Image (cartoon, rainbow, N blue to C red; front, side, top):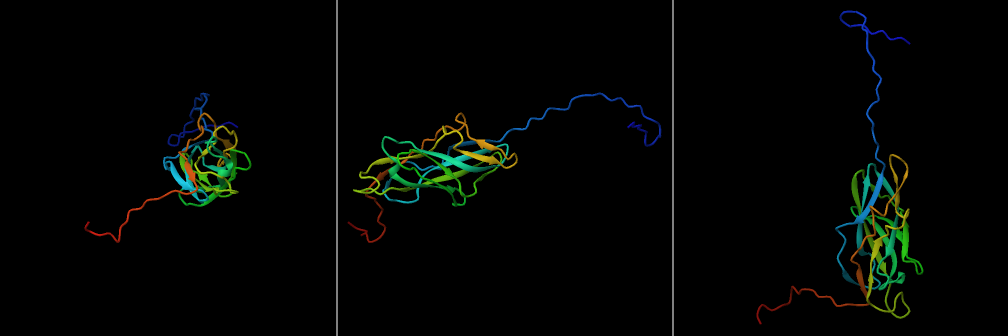
Length: 212
């Protein structure tokens, strides 16, 4: 169809000049997921065999360009010379803010690697972070139990080399988003030393004489 513009005030026909040109190029960033050790991870500690809910470290997840719903997390036992899968019965994963359990992982047989398929919601905000706490139920120590000797140095870390082991789905794009080794290498938690028993010291605050 032919379009003939006219002036609103004058009523005169306007002869327009149209120049064809390309608009500005817009680049839409793809969703990206990265993982790192969070600064809230505990320092090296001594713990008792058979203890449950032991804090083994925290992972910080970052979602770039869109909200990501995390689905899986790849984990590994890293002090293989000192510990074995028998040293830990189960790993549980928790939302650091709410404390809610969102997944579990088990190192079965002689496998030092495990993948947790999350059973609860763990949504990482766009261009922001969310922290996950790793807790462990430790194997008992003694004859005929999970391990027979004390002293295992146990550490559970994020496995950055497991391509596809840690992944989520972009809330806007609907695409599967994996971590990459270059941006999410293995973490290195301090770990815990698992002992059958160990002494503890506490400051006495009552029943003490004021004089020698």
